[in-house]
Structure formats: C-alpha cells, structure tokens
Image 1: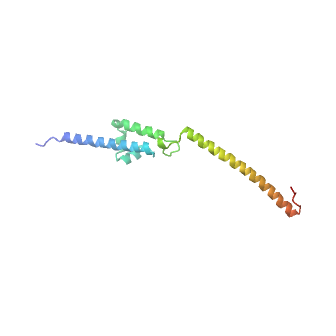
Image 2 (image 1 turned 180 degrees about the vertical axis):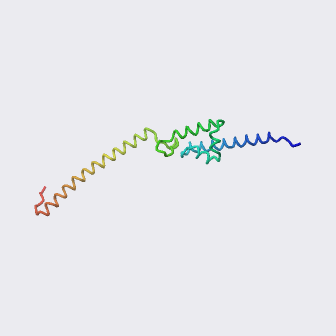
Image 3 (image 1 turned 30 degrees about the vertical axis):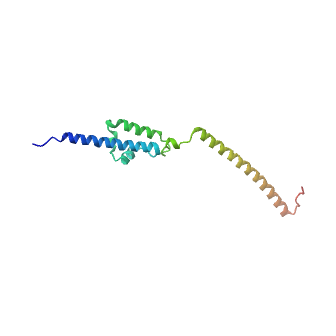
Length: 136
C-alpha cells in the first residue's frame, strides 16, 4: 500500500502560492516606488506568475492594488512618476511664474531689437540714397 502524500502536495502548493503572492507584492511595491507601466500582463510577467493567477478571486487584494496603481497613471499613457518625484503645487507655481517672467523679458528684448533693427535699416537706406544722417 502506498503512503498518502496528499498533505505534502497541498503544503507545496500553498507554499508556491505564497511565493507567487510575495513576488507580485514586490513588483507592485517597485512600481509604486519607482514608477513604470502598470498592467496585469506586465506585473504577471515581472513577477513570474500567470495572469490567471492575478484574476483568481483569492488574489482580489493584489488585483485591487494593481488597479489602484494603474488608475494613478496619467491619461497620456506614460507611467506615473512615483510620489517622491512628483512636483508640488507650490513648486509648480514657482516654475510657471519664473517661466512667465523669462518669457516677458524675452518679449521685451525682442521688441527692443526690432526697433533697433528698424532704425539701422532706415539709416542704411538713407546712406544708399545719399541722404546725410541726422546729427544728434
């Protein structure tokens, strides 16, 4: 009569499941920390598990976490930056203010250069016509 090894098989299956969960959690943690595209297929591939494993009802919390990370991604299709790399509203406003100021200064300089060019072109025209330059 053969020995009943079913308990060992069940224990090994349970350990494989726990290992898979641990790998998926590690991948999700890395994606949350470092950013990157969050898809079921991508997470499954990086964790070395099947997509079916992620869709299994027993892994509902993992799938919920995956979807939460995916929903944080911008609609542009690019991966979201991790929280520690995102710009704060105050910093964003400071950057916008600085860019607007730089833009205003460049517009003023362009206007000054246009006027200077117009005067210079007028002087060149007058010289070509033989009209003496006004003394000032």
